[in-house]
Amino acid sequence: MNKKFISAILICCFVLSLAACGRHEEPVASPEDTVFTFGGENISLGEVYLYATTVKEDYESIYGKGIWGVDISVTRDDSANMEDLTRRDIIDDIVHVKLLQSRASTMKIALSEDEASEVSSQTDAFYENLTDEQIENMDLTYEMVQKVMQENALARKVYDSIIDEAGIEVSDEDARETTFYDLYFECYSVASNGDVTGFSEDEKEAQYERALQAYNTLINPIESTYNDGTSESNTSSTNIEGLAEYYGLHNSAYYTMTPSEIEGIYGKDICESMYGLEDGSYSLVTESEFGYHIFYMKALTDREATDARKQELIVSKRRKYMDTHYEDWLKKTDPDFSYEKSVDFEVYDSIKFAE
Image: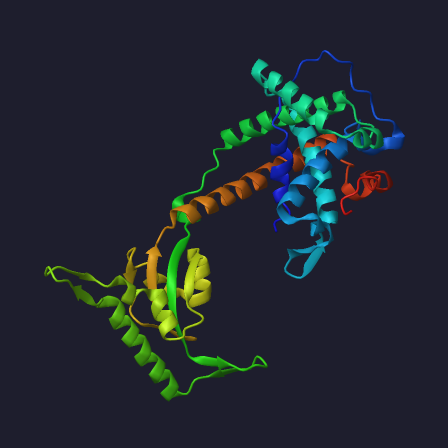
């Protein structure tokens, strides 16, 4: 799981606007319930809880309540506990919201009346769903919920304006995902203890002959003739997955990969030859260091997979672009702030994730 997924949840879960100001102003948090101070503002336990409970509910709805005890990979050689990572990301995203919304006036960005009305409606709905226990334990108020939603709404508009101006795009070529079938005649065996033994030359030759036989079956489908004199190709007899089953090729399968992934697995020459195929066509019997392959090109550009990857790349590029802004703004707003030194973990630990 990508721990940065949390950023999308936090800034998108509160789709907000600057609501009416008919209620009394939110009091500054007292030192006893302050999780951290940023830019001179005390961020209360209740405010952090509003972010945390939203993330907790979203994560558990997808991954289950046991997610908080899971260790996930953060680098090739390092892993970290999901709860620890989430706690840190929540604080980071609160800081980002503060930084973004503070730039609204400079950028002459405000929320429309419709957006303000939407915030009021969402604040009502959110507050009504809080339990008495949550309100009492976290000292939550309607005004606090409204404040958090207003800030997120304004932050969202500032973020969108900055991103729109940046014009971040990803081409189909850069995002390409290719779907193909690898009818794979391996030339090695794996013992029960995991030892790998390459085939003899005679065994390799036998595999090559089987691959040629399969190729001829694919390109010369059997014709079925009917009583009325018409005929059609018997596609079931040339189904590539059926051939894999017929030859006992357990490592054959459909794959969806990027060009770089294909090159990394099969090598540059095979990758280039695969991209010389057309949709719906077959490669010749192709040799790799692992055996013989017949590739069926289902889609050089798998539209659904490519569009999904394009969105992932856009999100990644936007994140990197915004990270440079956050770093610069942080130095100007609160240069001494850090998660390790600025957060009161004794207070923060009052928010429970694992049950």
